[in-house]
Length: 221
Ligand SMILES: Cc1ncc(COP(=O)(O)O)c(C=O)c1O
Image 1 (cartoon, rainbow, N blue to C red):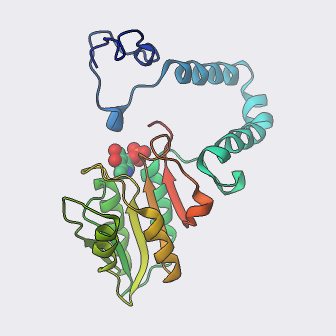
Image 2: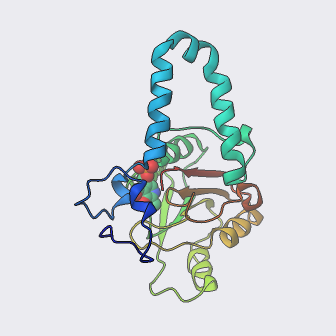
Image 3: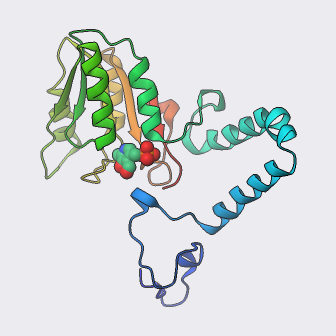
């Protein structure tokens, strides 16, 4: 964006960021700028903590975290008690992948559109367990939901235990049909793990209706 008003009258979005006026910023995926109201709110919380650290961390922390999970509940459509704060999506996939009871001969099915850190995590964990990591090709261009579902499902074998997918892919910016795939996977008894790093705020979420086992994401999109 140049900073010029898009509708000829207003340009309020640019004013929401602290970016230098000469900067035209596109990469909110890798190192996104923080909107001013969010920046101010988190600085206010940091100051609040510094005023009485023992009271904040020792006495108020649990209730405040519950309040924050309750606020997120409606946004992602999951019960507050099913939500856990983690440092980032990569940490989440590591927690899940390293905790699953994968055995030699099992298979983890994914696509060839996944984010590098996630691919490396699954390869590492699968290597340790003797599990096969199957990167199913999803050819471009994509013309229909059925095409994607069929391409991914062609990788399912009697040994498949886990389906791991991005909700919105990093290298190709494709919104994968996770609803269709998660429902089908659950019917087949597979564990479903979704990398939703780019999804909250970009696509509506109802994680309860989705019925996914693990949905890892961040909220800075
Ligand atoms: C699809 C996808 N998953 C995961 C990540 C990494 O997210 P995080 O830094 O929150 O771990 C990215 C970062 O761009 C991504 O594009």
